[in-house]
Image 1 (tube, rainbow, N blue to C red):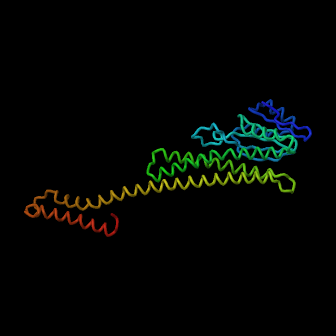
Image 2 (image 1 turned 180 degrees about the horizontal axis):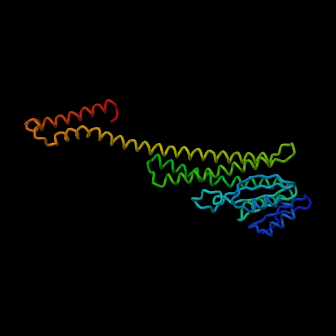
Image 3 (image 1 turned 90 degrees about the horizontal axis):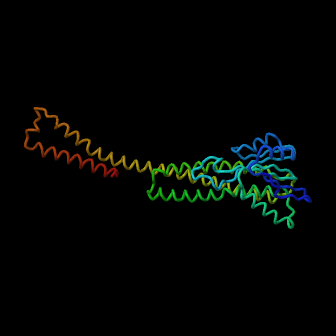
Length: 303
């Protein structure tokens, strides 16, 4: 569905929005605005990653915005995000997306209310659009931060479950995907600078937003990596504690087993078996072995 959001003839500015694009509609737009065929193919590819292309008279952007309805265990860019394609020049802006995007309506309402008070241009609408797309990542990043804090408390309190490692894996994959997409869109934002040599405050603000969100994504990745290492370290330490206990028991019982095995061979000529003191002497021997091993372990501070 094609609709015109803004059309200002006095400023030679037009914003066209396309939802659930069809080939016939795209062909119409391509002919009207001289859009490149390769860009149209990329525009219709739902799995395409963010990028920026500068063409003859028309620039092409692919961005990915967070899908608020994505499943909890989603880890791919197609399930986590929706693609928004943008064609723009000094005269027009075309946004193309498959699903309804609230941020489009938000930006349209903002600029529609500023028609009389603000002399904006296409690039200002574009900067606002890219900024809202980047800010859409803040909530899932914050939610994942909070989730990681709960996992950390569970690990330190010893309340881990069999699903904790799997949940950490899902969180790590999601965080890695967020970081990759934000990094790619940061590169897109850096290519949007206006050709004039003067400082563009709006573009500076966009770059600061991209850097801020990217720092959050990188920090989240580091936190999850550290938490995974911590979880593995604690699991290894607990395994070592169990092995130490088993080793202590085996060291105590190994010589006793040897003594019992010797006197349990039932040979006919074993002098100790016919001695009245044989039984208590064997017990004294075994108790002495236990005491020697015990004090040796205490001296080494192993128990």
